[in-house]
Length: 471
Image (cartoon, rainbow, N blue to C red; front, side, top):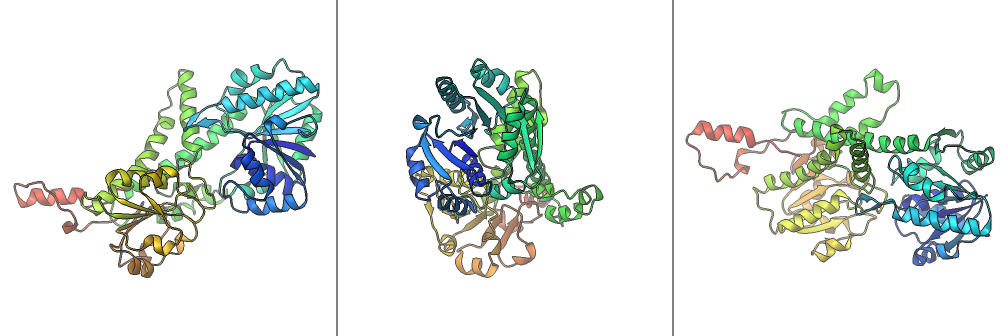
């Protein structure tokens, strides 16, 4: 089957190359940026996603790919259906401008060609977008049939999700037998696809509920972690292992406990934007949603607490300290640094006056960091060398192999913050190892207070209130 994929970002390229390499469809990639299209023709991706380059190479070899700008999209190359995968946010705020522009272009051309065509929107939409924004644009066009098909893939695991997740969610007021057959053919690479057809608003809500659910789990885990860090002999990662034996979790094979592991908070272009947009939808309906409203602020607090912990380690003086950020992308196996916690932390440390060195196995440091004086070092050992503090932000598998011996040899001051809570306290005994979600006690001499105390007891009270690390 011939299809068009409009938008060559992570969503569009991941879907298009899976449909081409695995589903054996002929895919026409459409984008405004001709430079991106020329690079794809040569086998070069504009970003890294685990395994995606292999699918591109395979599809090019099988000659299943075409590349066209929107200006060159015509009746011959558009195919039997189009997947719209353009961005729906700008600077972290929902923005449907690009989506509306694409739909208007397709609508005008279908009327000119007098040709029926199925348009599938994979981009994330706030609830009521279809009814209030999308449908009014195309309702008078008899040739354009439009459905929603929200995507649930995770960056870093996109290919695996697109191949193994059998859920196919369709949002449509009505779908013809012919278009239903097109959808079935599109997803023929799935072993046993479960196609669910719901109202468009229901489909929009499902996507938002899914993203906010996992965002809430992350924020809840971080709240647990901050409390545990003040309680002697506690470690949330060990507690989560106990949870796994709960029959309500074990019998249903739930793996959502991974989202409850305390850390630096979530990043990326989706969760924070979608949660805030979800809150705005409720506000527009006159509904107050206190739990949803607290997710983003709780997430920001998780990131802020890493800075606070750094201040405590160095007695409030971070100026000129050499700090290494391990992980710029918002998650491993991707090069996406949009709203990434590593980038946020680097900017904060630069504002404080620290010297920042960044390392990532796949991502390139954003220009805003290099303009401020941050450096990216490709070699991990060189990045760590001479640092006063290292912060593990990204849970890439290579970082999890770091040894205490290596850190002792390379670092100037042996302070290490495990911002993912994935390493073991038992593994690091000689360095100052700080694990999110785990109790750690600062020795009294580490705290240099300028506060004057009236007596010994008041000084002891001060120490007892300030000797614990906060995430």
